Amino acid sequence: MPTNTVVLKKGYKPLKKEQYMCPNHQEYFRQKLSNWRAELVEESRETINNLQREVRDVGDEAERATRETENSLELRTRDRYRKLINKIDKALIRLDEGEYGYCEETGEEIGLARLEARPIATLCLDAQERWELRQRQLGDVR
Image (tube, rainbow, N blue to C red):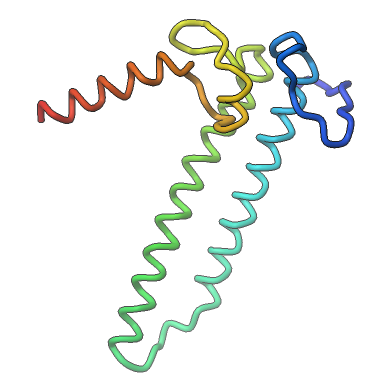
């Protein structure tokens, strides 16, 4: 992992007038992704701790069913977090390799606004729309 020599000013936001994916942009998104990852890991840890602490011997069937439903929802959320953490890790690798911010399909800039809204984006908007259209078409065939 490269050593970060860029120190961002407090409250820094990437600007269009700056060169796209300049060192400031890269460091901004590295921090954004790393912080997001840390939050997800902590929430997952809390979920595991909650499930481990929970008393399994619940009095009546209705309460047991309610707990099992809640546990199922928590585990599904945790699984979504796991998948999201994997995507964040891949984005961090792309950052290290200098590929972050560029469409995997076309090589075009994904754009600061799109990355701000979805920092794990790997496709530019046009490529994403084409991908979604293909998914809908495949869904209609089945």
